[in-house]
Length: 265
Image (cartoon, rainbow, N blue to C red; front, top):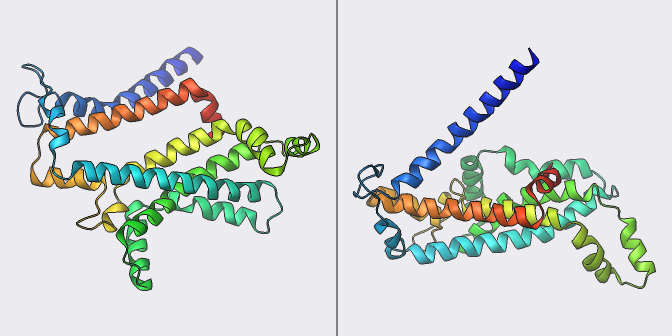
C-alpha cells in the first residue's frame, strides 16, 4: 500500500510538471516555425524569427526601460527591505508583526487591482510622471519579495557576530560588510533574483502606468501581438525564458538551489 502511494505521488508530480511546462515547450517550438504563423516546425525549422527581434519597432527602448526599472527597483528594495527586516527580526520595533504582514500584503492582491489602485492614487495626488510612477509601482511589487526573503534569512542570523566584530576592532560598517553580508549572501541572491524577475516580467500593474513614450517590454510584446502576430513574439518569449533559466543555473552554481529554497521559506 505504501509503495502504491509513492507511485501515485510520483505520477501526480510528473503530470503536474508536464502540465506546467507544456505551454512553454509549445512556445519554444513555435519560435522555429518556417511559416509566418504560430505553427510547430514539423516541415523544418527556421531561425529567421530570432534575427527579426532586434528590428521590432521600439524593442530596444522597451528592453532598456524594463532592465532599468527592474535593476533600480531591485537595488532600492534590497536596501529598504533589508533595513525593515532587521527592525522586524530584532524584535525591538512596536507592531513588528503588523509591519511584516503589511510588507508582504501586495503579494496577496491581484496585479490588476494593484495597478488600478496605484493609478487612482497617482491621479488623486496629481502625480503624472510616467517613469517615476512606474519605478514606484515596481517597488511595491519587488519589496515584498525582498522583505519576505530577508526576514527568513535574518531570523536565523546570529546578531552577536556583529558585536564580536566590533570587539575585534571593526567599525559598524565594517562589521556589516565583513560579517553580515557574507553570511546572508544566499538571502540577498534569492531576493535579488525574485524581485528582478517579478519587475522585468510584470504586466498587470505596468499596463496602467505606461504611456506612448514609456512602455516596458511586456507591454510592447502585447502591442506586437495586437498589431502583427508572428513567431517573432514566440522567439522573444523563448529568449526571456532561456534567460530566466540561466539566472537560476547561475544561482544554483553560486549557492545551490536547495539552500536558496531554504532561505526563502
